[in-house]
Amino acid sequence: MNNRVLIYDPVPFKGGSKKVMQTIVADLPCDVEVWVISNDKGSWSGCNVHFVPLFSPIYLQNKTTGFLYYIKHFVFFCSLIANLIKLKRFAKIIGFSGPCVDFSLYILTEIINVDIIQLIQGDIANSKIAGFCLSRAKQVFYLPSTHASILNALKCHSNNESLTNKKYIPFINGINRSTIKVKENNNKIGFLWAASLLKWKRVEVFINAITELNSNYECLDKYFASVCYIEPQTDSYIDVVNFDKVDNIHWYRDPNNLNDIRASSSVFISTSESEPFGLSILESMAAGLAIVIPSDNAYWDQHLIDGHDCVKYDPNNMDTLVEVLSRLINDPVFLLKISQQAKCSAQKYSHKSCYSQILKCIPN
Image (cartoon, rainbow, N blue to C red; front, side, top):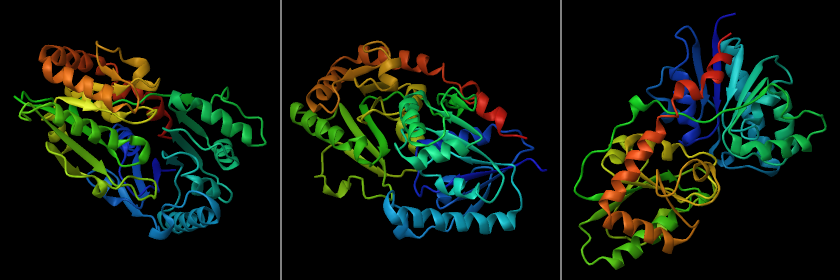
């Protein structure tokens, strides 16, 4: 059988999980033929893959529960079958959005004998569907932060499978540092927020903090702020149209030059609630930005040290975030120290070592 692999991507907008998958694809041996079936062609342009459109009615895309959720996945299943008939056999199919999002793949296993490799990069639902999918997967790679949710999903399913099964392998995300543009030397301090507008990303905390910061400074020439955002195709997101115009904030909708915007910034701020990993944080560390994160016991809170390679603030607390940003404005020596140490800490996250086990299991 030819060394062919199919990547399944039913999420119609960009995100960190796709960046991870694209980094893995770029490191596969040249004799592996990679196909992608997706309803998001823009995310895969420029990647060395064969693209196939997934039939995906817009009115079904944001259905995550109830009868329409099953209809959506049946439609996706039909699109998968139709394309597999044309494309012929694949030895392996990779799902990287989570078992419930990739449910159509597991319906496929009812009629086709194919190995499914599942990546889990965020907490999964405590449901029988998630447990069913996990039991059908050939190999499951998961971020350690998702461990508890996987256990709960397995308990929902009737079989006795557990995480002690050798098919469950933890991994952490990495980056190819050669693709990251390093920070430029600027006179102004640039505060960067970059994420989707999903509600749990809490962009309003950042906006409110910059608004408060502006009221504390008579002269706004010392700093500026950038918001790079993606509008997800879901009901659960914040519409930026509802925000008043704030001085000193530059808005960028799904920018193609994020690398340049990041390189012109000085500080990356995360306001997410319990971020499973935070690839944007790692990319900003590698670029040489100072990192500001909530003290929320999430991944980076556990692995970065306050005052050493990051600065921490109380979760969802605008006042403590303003205090941190004010200190970075007023103490450039401290800012430089934090950014330099963050860049050193990023060196531990080489994509080749972080994804080595995934890369080994994809080729035949």
